[in-house]
Length: 157
Image 1: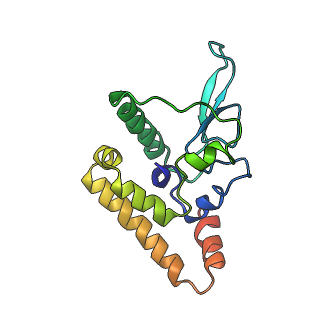
Image 2: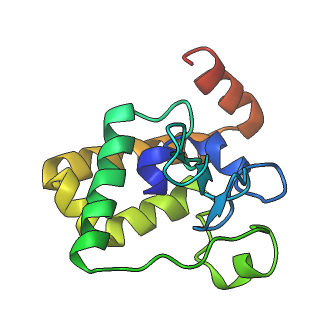
């Protein structure tokens, strides 16, 4: 899901831990460091779940679709969530699945995920991967990667 929810190269600098952003696939009650943040009291009219994985540059349709596909897969396989975490950067985070630390890693994980590949469909999956791999190649060829990022992203977004 990371590649669809955080499709830019710069997004992965957030997933370093201790910056009120997730670094592992964990959930917690009113905890900004958890990937899924449950806010409000059970049964309350203000209760909600925030997914803190997506970034502002994500295509909202792809990000929401990825969550729906993953949720349906979890329901079909009757997966049970781990207990909530109170400290997402220590202890429980060590045993949880870490989020990718780069767009390249996220694309590799997406390519290996049969559920998301099926959800995207082969043509869309191929196009998405090709575009993102070209983006990574352009950054790798830049003499000044930080300057390239500023030109690439700040002027567009």
